[in-house]
Length: 64
Length: 426
Image 1 (tube, rainbow over the protein chains, first blue to last red):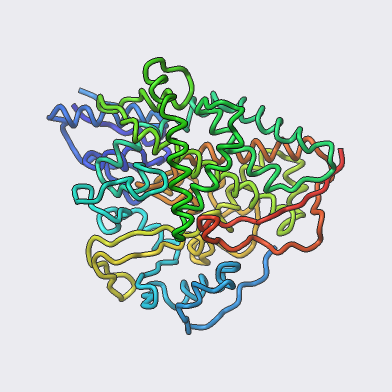
Image 2 (cartoon, one colour):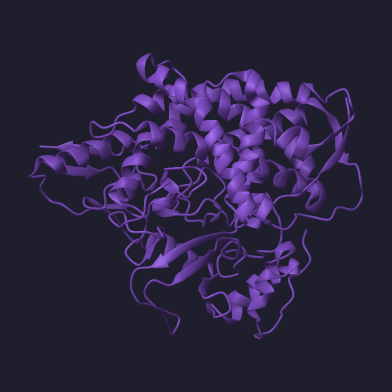
């Protein structure tokens, strides 16, 4: 499983990278950069789901 | 408009920070810091100071190097024991505990949950205005700005409306206790204990039978399968009443002060186009926000502008100075609600905007960005818009005003006018 960011929807609120620094980091423009290629453990999946839930722009999805 | 800010030259005596002059008008010293001492080691107060926009922003962003917490989460310090709010997220640094507590409540003040509260903000603002609408004059601070936010928050929490005057007293003591004086702290801690006794049975009841109110939601909100402890709920209620009430209160007063005395010409623009109240809010948060400084502790040696800030040093981030940085904003000392180099819409925790403009630093940035940012903006815009709509020819009662007053121990270090008399027609 992977985390995907839709940059058109994203408005750089920062919620994902401040809440889950193990998964995301802010790039030079303020967009999130996904740090983990493959969500290969249950905690990471749970954190990714939380990030998706709280994203105010609905810009985060998790794909197989 | 504003007077041009004087160039004081490089000589800076750190005792200036204790002077009344600095408290009243810190901007010349801010400019001196930015221009001559971008990293200032204040040996008199044993602290370091950052003041340029991008340095303040950079420190807010860099959690690895700058920690907000005074104590380690796993050390001997009993969190909440000597804080006026009790256990609350303000004492925690960049820890998992901070993230957990923040995540439980942060979602309550934004988006649809905030929208659900908007009609109530309308209603309370109108009730407050009703009390003075027939007088032809109003003292904004005591009759308007200090009355709206506390009533909004206690209403959101679902606290009994007949006790609202008591909450106003408590939050004023709590805020004073955030300052530095022993007696203020003692009175703040007593107000905290009285409030806790008052709210204890409500927490118990709403945990069992939660309603739609915010207190119920906080009691039963879950994150990773855990809830807040009753102590944490109480700490959060104290934080909400005090921090959420007082800062918004002062923000509204600052907006009116600047529209009436700094830019009366732009008040006409706002009356003609009420959506501009959001711009008034944003420009106030840049030009002279309620909070001017945040504190951090370094976690390592940090090289900045050719100097090195040592590990475990106290650092002041003067966001009030960063907001006036010529490197970020043109004519920074001019209050202008039509400014085109400032991001005018809703703020982001990241401080980065798709319109490419710089945002104000008034809510902080990053991990500890103000949680009530969206609510503060809505409350201020709605309350001000309603007042402007319900009266005509709103104007200062007195030609002269002493200005935004010094932050003092009694005000918890927040900046606002002490009094603001306005007159109006119906």
